[in-house]
Amino acid sequence: MPSSDRKRSSESSSSARSQSSKFIPNMAQLHQAIEDLPDPEFWSEKTYVCTILVEKKQKLLEFTRKRINRGEESPYRWVYQGRVLIRKRDS
Image (tube, rainbow, N blue to C red):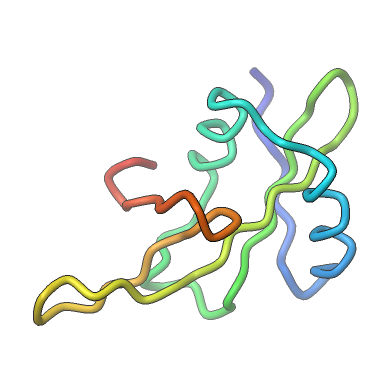
């Protein structure tokens, strides 16, 4: 699979949301995007937008950076559409 191109959220977050809401990735496509995610502990923005190539078309996937409560710790994690939590070891 070709590697995905990276885009920062500041470029076009609203357009990414409208395009990603029409596209639902399968697990292989989601894993492809997850491989390109930066470490959420060091990323300064609230979102990260990845592009993946699907049938010769670019599709955008937007991930949100959120703190997760784990006892005394509150590490950052990436979340996809508020439903899929991505741990650092998953990438």
